[in-house]
Image: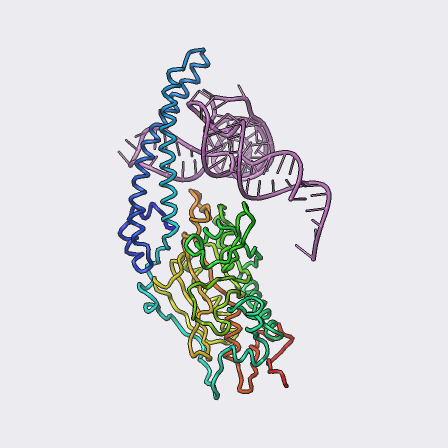
Length: 430
RNA sequence: GGAGGGGUGGCCGAGCGGUUGAAGGCGCCGGUCUUGAAAACCGGAAUCCCGCAAGGGAUCGGGGGUUCGAAUCCCUCCCCCUCCGCCA
């Protein structure tokens, strides 16, 4: 959520910042309601001040045995007026809140302005391998190995789900373990295990609600019970762990890593990536989350990107880092770097991680503050999140990058200790 | 699921419907004393909102209501605890 006060004081700047993100028209409405609300507050508070004085007079008169009937009659009318005005203010509060919830975060000044075409490649690592044969897409590699099964997944659920058999399932688990170990042992993150179902308020805190409800799986609760939502990413519960808390500056930055499945409806993605495991309703992800002070949050973003990159480097998967343009960023983000892994089967770089600094956008919604070490009033923290990495897509990348002509797949060295030193996954002999 | 109990400041904990923004204790900050510290004593300290300011308003789990006036009464929602039942 963007600070209303900031919008009030810099309306043009805000409108300009949101040109490529949508929501410029909201700013005008917001300013209108905001100014009306403030006038109303000033007026009603004068009435409340009067009420407080007279009420005190009534109390004293009663104590002295006087007759405050006249004052009480006056106050009855005033009380009604106050109630009416308060109701209007509440309504305006609701309108402002609703408008603010619709408004995406303001991009950082270093972010290129424009749509996808304005994204900027920052660097590349690794060289895509030259294949002496036609590299197959992962679904062919996986099905031939008997480890990927989309048909049975569709039978159990529907399309965009998958079943992993044998070494495939183990590979998924090994990757998860490897990533968690790397981030906890070498990168200083604390592992945390969290609920996979959260309430609407938590979803609002990180910005999933109210705008993106159609992307979420929602439970059907009996009459009178509040529904829960399946998390689309661990970012949601992990970022909100400290919702409503005021932390000490000394405790910052907090660095958390969590493994969870992620559930997404992928509404509006019809026709995209329909084959294979690229875009699923359910996938595993190791997520990095940081809470930092504004002074350090961009350094923390840089190190988070580096931490995610390290996973790809150790797996020897070629990738590139892309700085997303204003129009391509997520709703809550002020600045985002995507990591894109090379997929030989598609001859393309595809997103495998997205690391964002949301600055105070989520912290303001969730009420996550810190008390500066020097004293003074509590400020909102900056929240960051990034995939470290999407496990399913990493598995895909391995299948495609390390496939051999005979249909087997070489297991990356760093994963072998997690797989009883398995060096190669081979197709069933028959 | 059934039956009870409870949510007050950083923490514990009082609180007849009217000087209660809120006793008391602990903790915290400053001072006196001390070589230094502890103890003792004195003092200080909440947050948000409106306003250029003076100042004002709001806040005792959330939201409504009753009343001239609500931490105190009523309704409702949320959360926590205890016992019983069920259960991986």
